[in-house]
Length: 113
Length: 115
Image (cartoon, rainbow over the protein chains, first blue to last red):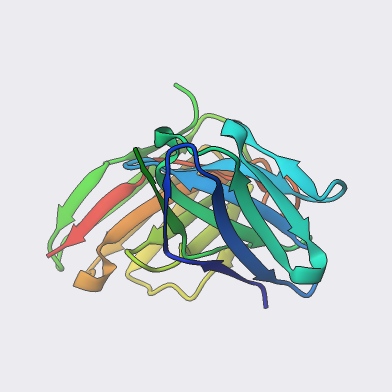
């Protein structure tokens, strides 16, 4: 069965600092991997996805993630945090044939001025 | 109007009430989803519809009853709910159900409180 683990329910960084949100997955088949962001009082929206090909994926708002099969990880990074990045971030995995996307528990990012 | 629209945004109901949540997507997608989002818990998939046919029912109690009359509309009918059902209910749609096209577009959710 597929699963997603996000390490740290809360992460706090200073404005301008590196953002690193961790995600590890388990899947018995090659996975599709996603990062979504949820701003207050809104639904989730896609930041980036990995399906096949290049393992470093760039998304919106300067975020990127690297798929590392050997580590079963898909960590999300941004070189320089902005106040507007404060939100909750969800890592998700789906398999190549199923209907389910499994979401992690989410990591809330706080950005300090 | 574009995207995924959910109504109402907030709902307070007693345990004996019957109410319905509505979701409408204007993206031409074939798949629609209901999720439950509770505090400090992962997003829980409730139902998946593909081309108006239910393809996933994730052991959801029968007090939640979905309806998908066409590919643009999805309802969640609620009756005799429990206080632990209080949560944010999110609707999503995607071009197809599953696979690399399964980028989901979410509505803003209905915040449900059961008293």
